[in-house]
Structure formats: structure tokens, C-alpha cells
Length: 248
Image 1: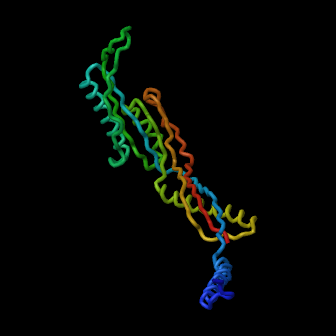
Image 2: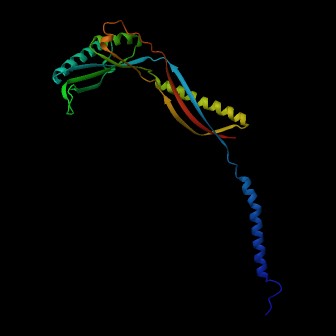
Image 3: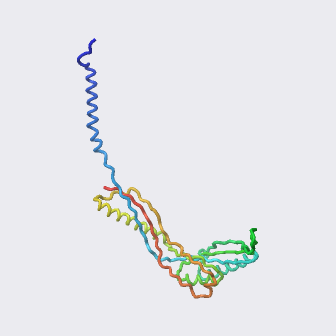
């Protein structure tokens, strides 16, 4: 039996509908593409802000080191010596809240003179008792350094300078860091012919606070001397930030 020369009406109808649907999809595709915004570029810049300020406080770390044969005798001698140091510091106008015990310890001292592989004998004991003194008036610093030695401290371990409003100064440095990053980002954006948009993210990448000035001296070198000359100078507090902007 021969096939009909013309397709049935139902088949023609289905073909027309399929062609129309395909044309509609093709014509709609460019419109969707035009409605989607192009991805915005970004620029990332680092900034640093620093503020220099004169310290207004200092902390002295001093110790009394005592040696002897008997732990009881050495401890008693050391305790009397450190008590004398603390009493002298308080008499010089330092409040109890600014005095703190640091680094107390009792250590054996060994005799290594014997040429033997056996455990060396204990020749005696060393007692170390330290005290930290916060000085809120820097004019007293040199005199107090001499005072703690003359009172019995035989080791001055460190001096560190501090800024009483360090948090406020750090906030100023953070603002400067943001301004620095924005300034540099603006230069690059202008050179590239674009404008800065909104901030996409901002990260603090580090801060720097005043570091202790380490000083170590034996008491006998400082005893009965004039007030120790000390210059506080300036401390630098800084902050670093990384900021990413979108571009218009």
C-alpha cells in the first residue's frame, strides 16, 4: 500500500507548534543576556598608618639574686633583701598597685669540678626574686633605677616604656591606614579610567605596639652612683589594613 502524498493535519499542526516554540526561545535568548550585568572588576590595596607619641610611663624589672649553701638561709636572706627594695620604692611615692612580684625561683647550683660521668654534686642554691615597678611619672625613672639597686637589687633586667592611652593612639593609626589604602586605590583607579565603588571587604593585617627596651646590669655597677640618665624618646604605634573595592 502506498504512503499518502501529504501528511495528516495533526502532524502539520505539531510541526508548526514546535517551530514556533524554537523561534520564541531563540529570540528570547539575547534579551536574557542583555539583562545580566557584566561582572564588576575589583582593586585591592594595602594601607599603613603610624602615629609617634612620647611615652608617659615606664616599667622597671629588677631582681635580687642570692646564693648560699642552705635553701632556708638563702631564702631568708633573699626575702629580707627584696622586702627592703619594695619598702624603698613605696617610700618614694609608688603605690602598691604598681608593684608586682615577678620571676621567683629556687635553683640548685652544681659542682662540675670533678672529672666524672656521674651526676655532679649540689654545691649550694640560688634564689631569685624579681619585682616589676610601674612608674607613672617619668621624671622619677632615673632616681628609682638607682634606688632599687642601692636598696638591694643586684640585677636590673629590663626597662620598658608605655603609653597610657595606647588604644586611642592605635585607633588613630587605623584611620590613617584606611586613608592610605584609599589614597593609593584612588590613584590606580584614576590612572585606569575607572571609579571606585563600594568596599567589598576590609581586613586588619597587623598592628605594632611599643616594644620593651631590654637593659641588664649588675647592681654593683650602679650602686652609689648618680641618678641613671634615661631618655624615653618616642614610640611608634602602627596598623596595617587590606581593602578591596569594586570598580564602576
